[in-house]
Length: 436
Image 1 (cartoon, rainbow, N blue to C red):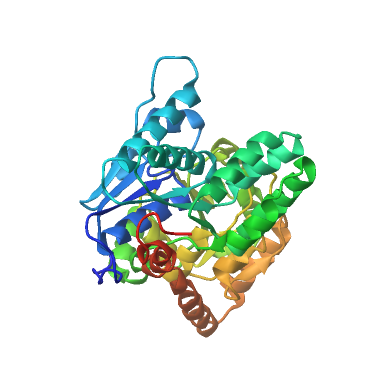
Image 2 (image 1 turned 135 degrees about the vertical axis):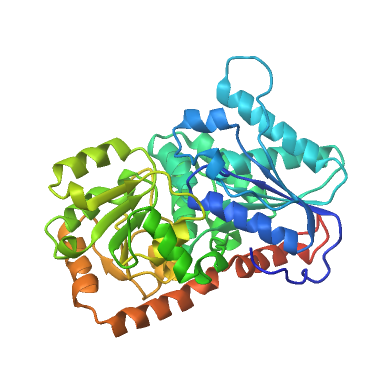
């Protein structure tokens, strides 16, 4: 963890931060972001940090890729993860769990401790925070609320509702978002997505969300623990890789969710027949809904003996895998239900100092990598193959080193302290309840 730093000026003692998220053990960049914000909050004077999330059985039932609980890095003392139990015994599972989460938030907002509450994902987290804050204010308490749109909350709810003419649910989500004291999105792309889908809703239902969202939503990039990737011991990295039968510089790496939008078939198709495949292994690390398909693709690829699928990578192992890679490839492509709105794994790899990043101009990815990555068209295995062979087989060591230096320098802007200070300065310099 990063060294302690002074608290922001004017911050009162005894302040609580509540983060409402899909937290660990979900394999998700924004679950990692919640951890980063929580850890920084302790060093910025918050005395009580709560991560309020879902019960493990509910997360498992949702089909989300989960880490084994024993591999989750413990949170620092002062951070409490709460998983409120469902309320009542009526047979509406989602309603029971949402009632339990919202009810716990009301309790936290009304116990006399000045509180800032931040939600990641508009549906259902921001909806729950908005409802709980409304109740708390009715009961005479107050809370400052921050809502962060990550993108899939728009594609999965607002866009889908508009496409099917169901404007009521979309209006509910956007109204809860605008009820928040501070509204942010994880990238400029995400903000534009929010506004464009709101404009479609306005045309459908006669509402006026788009202009207000355009004026109020700011950009707050994901918070990343840069120190976990920049201070690696090469000898420790070598030992970590050795346990996996790998050597530094001896493999190409994909590390993300195993999902269709991540372009796994394009990656494998590009690796097959490449000059790179004759020199280096392909390591695919992650879990997700495409795992069974991926195993079948690898078995049929003709290069199965050179492909490693790692589904049990823990938090401590991930930086070493990134640092030891000869190239990091994420050929993400847009799909109706998901678009890569930033690309946290790309930034982490850039910080770790591994090989060049190969990716696609999809969603907010260029905001994450700037001009430091090799960018190929989406859904194009031939382009992936050409890029792999270029960076692995043709680049000089000098060019690789210079690219790594520029990539790390660019990625440092997403340090969790920098992001936290920029975001929370909007509320920490004002008394609770006085943020416009």
